[in-house]
Image (tube, rainbow, N blue to C red; front, side, top):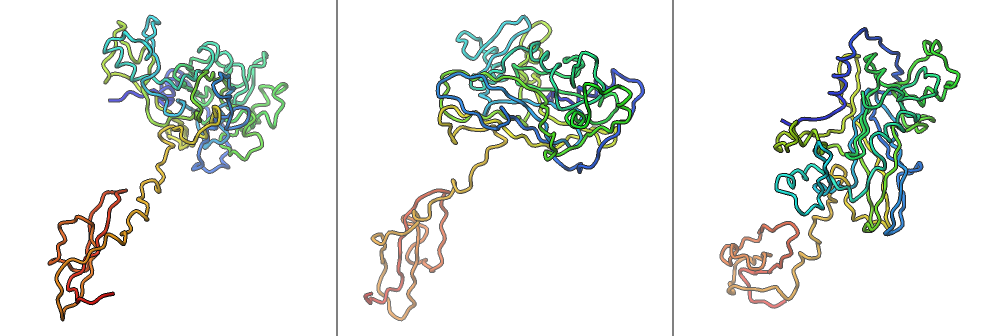
Length: 395
């Protein structure tokens, strides 16, 4: 059985541990529940950024949630293009690093590389502690309300208890603390800040505030605050092309030490590896957990001239139908290949047959004037024109 790491399981654990009385929050239900949540990955308010050919670069990245259909938790696993599976690195529980570039790995450690992703050398700058500190003190798009006197913003509670950002696995997990407490969906900090002076807002004022838990990308404040911001390091020497950072919707292996190694620091069998699953979960009734539909808008980093040939993540690639068609002109019968086999016979109808050249299944005596042949898709073939009951006339 696959073992998934998702925000839903974290929510259940956290809610059980907290216990106590639950208070339902007011919500703004003006947005239909069927609306999609949108995850939009940008750099400097754009979904495209250019990097000089062959050069390294540091790209500021913001992950926005400009539209919500009512959610209390988000788990996102990001990657670059197809992620380069098997070309990354992993650590054991002592901190020893095993990399795809190592030439002396035994078979078991080589196999464990299947859980890793190289991401073409792209790295999220900083470690977990550094990024968590930044996250805890920045304005993010969820959790309005009364703030402590040191002006910490949404996400002020300790990151790591209910929310995590892990640069090595490109994984973001955010669960609203108040949503867990109240069995509700997370509300928008941006909506709150757009209508209130957050510096003078007092705890007693919050009793009269109606949280906004559903909103669309058309709101003037939809992009005022990101879910999280970080810096992506682009390595030097990359081939020119498009490198697309997007959400991975399929389950992917978790390359973390606890996922690959047991308590004795021995590699686990592959069937015991765990998975990371992107998911967005909300509630409609205050009781039930509902998996929300969502779409992600990627960030494209163009190195050099860029390229339309670079592969995007598997869930977003489509095979254009026209690429599988055989060009019509290749099926024409060249005039010089026509033949008129058979004897000259009077008083009978002339039968003309177009048949695939070399097709032994259609012989002169079985010609009907209504033939069919089977060919492979994309195959080029020649056609013969055969005549039965030739009257011996010219022209």
